[in-house]
View 1 (cartoon, rainbow, N blue to C red):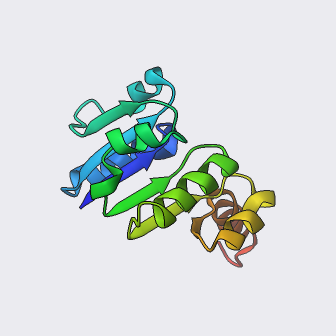
View 2 (cartoon, rainbow, N blue to C red):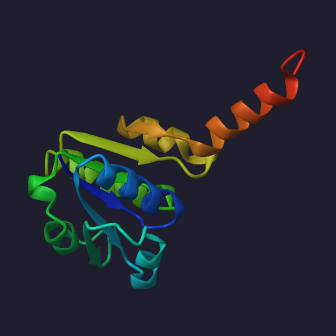
Length: 135
């Protein structure tokens, strides 16, 4: 599958590597060129530097042929807009959004996004480990 990963921080670069290893054609988009240094040295996908909210940048990333897009920047508003545009304007079949700040979760829910909240999941898991009896 052709997949676009928007954001090349810790999550985006790790996701891009995992997808690449699984045999997907991966394009990583970030507005900050040095962020691509986060990618695994053996990553052989594409990188596109540019403003992630710009139509031209998304087109250069191949959004018209994308089967999936993951918006995983550290900005909930950017993630929400990119995901909405991918779903509605470009009809990308599978769009996943990272929820960075739990206070913004309602925004993603209002847009009807499929959401991954690393903060929420992480807090829940830590709570489980802390309060699990007998461990």
